[in-house]
Length: 169
Image (cartoon, rainbow, N blue to C red; front, side):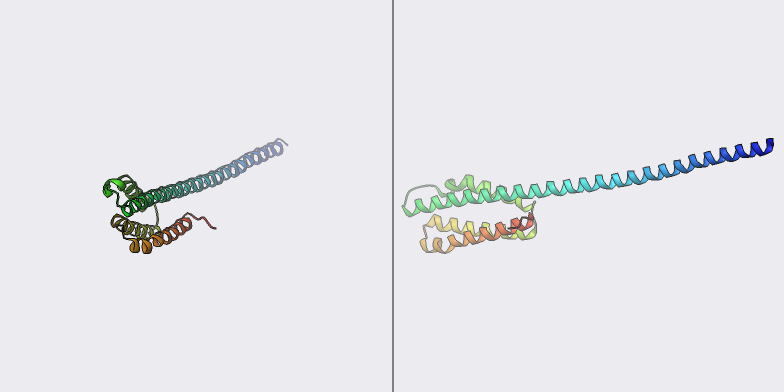
């Protein structure tokens, strides 16, 4: 009888140890999977944060560029009006601050946006520079042709910017 009781005790001990080992293995597996899922969630969150930061950088670059082009356009328009009135002024000095801001904003834009926006920004710059030449010379016919082109170029650029930023109308 002692052998039967001893065997039963061994079976109970083996069953208990087996249960502990099985529970430990399941717990270890669950911990490993949970760790991997948490790591994937952290990686996904970091990627989303990086994408959000890049989008915000592009938005800021686009904003600064549009503000700079507006200031430059306003300076060129005022220069045109002065030239029509035959006022004496230094055209380079009149637009110096605005052209500097425009060029700085353009550089930031070119390193922050995609090819379509960069190409349209270059086109817009060229139209604005041509408009500046017409303003300086008070060429009314050229001004009348170029001035609407600046609005078209700006509208096309703005649409491309909005598309790149994922903003739908």
